[in-house]
Length: 141
Image (cartoon, rainbow, N blue to C red; front, side, top):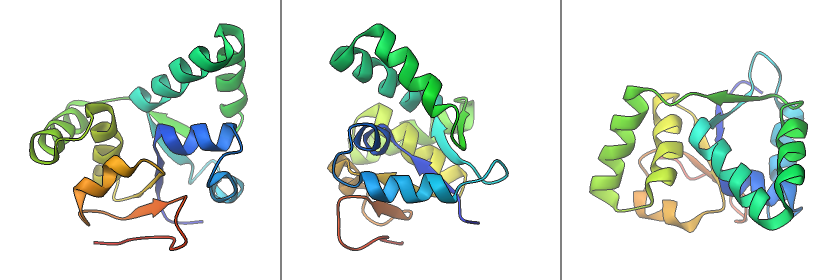
């Protein structure tokens, strides 16, 4: 796997719950390597944590993150470039800011955003998206 993939929270949550598209995320995870990990914004990582906590409790959420850290996933700290790109996307497309951070990371890393979140449809075709719950695999700009 040589392409860069950026997971948003919905992709990870669907994978964890064995929900729609979980098998696509699992294939990406199996294809990822330490040299080419799947990327996740630190903010989206936090989103997975708090949603897991709400659904299953604190200890389960902590164990879930520990288990995910054993996979080829790299948590990317939020920097000023990502923050400003996310702000631009928020201003223009009016989607939730946390989603804008995932989209900004995908844009800045020239990667494909992996998601099931329909809010990203508002972005049009500005960057590649792998819709884990659609029959087509990638919509490219």
